[in-house]
Length: 186
Picture 1: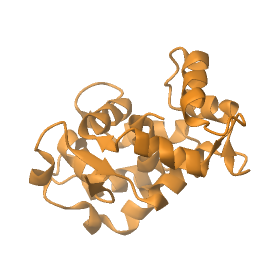
Picture 2: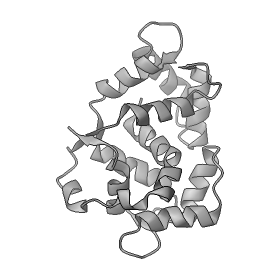
Picture 3: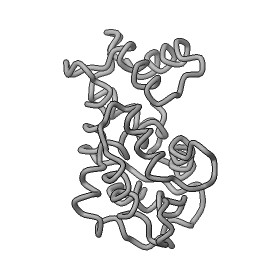
C-alpha cells in the first residue's frame, strides 16, 4: 500500500484530535528540513485507524472492492483495476483474497516507513488548485470525498490549529509538522 495513501487517511481520520489538542501540532519545523530521505514510522493506533477506514463493512479485512472504493473517493483512479490487483498480489500473503490487519501492517513495514516525499505527495492531493497551500475549503472537499462530514467552520478551525504563520492556510512545512507529530523517526 502506498504510504501517501496512508497519510491521506491519517489526516482525515485524526482531524478531531487536532481540533481538541492543537498545541500537540507545534513541534520544531527545523527537525523536518533534513531532506527527502527522512523516514517516519506510524503507530499501531494510526495504522488501525487507516485500516478501519478501508474496511468499510467492518469485517476485519479489506476486499479489493473496498480498496477500490477508497481510492476512488480520493480521486486516485489511474489504472485502478490493475493497481489494486498488483497490490493484493504483494500484500495478501495468505492468498485468501483479502488484506488482514496483520498483512496491512506488514505491507507498511515492507515499504520502509513513510518518507518525506510521500508526505509531500499527500500534500499535493489536498492542494487541489496547486498553489502550494491548503485552504479550509480544500480540506472540506477532501474530507467530503472520504465520506466525512466537516463544516467549513470546523475545517477553518482545523487549518488555524496548524497554521503557524497566520496566513489562514496550511503550507508544506506546516503540513509536515502536522503529519509527523504522531510518527516516530527511523
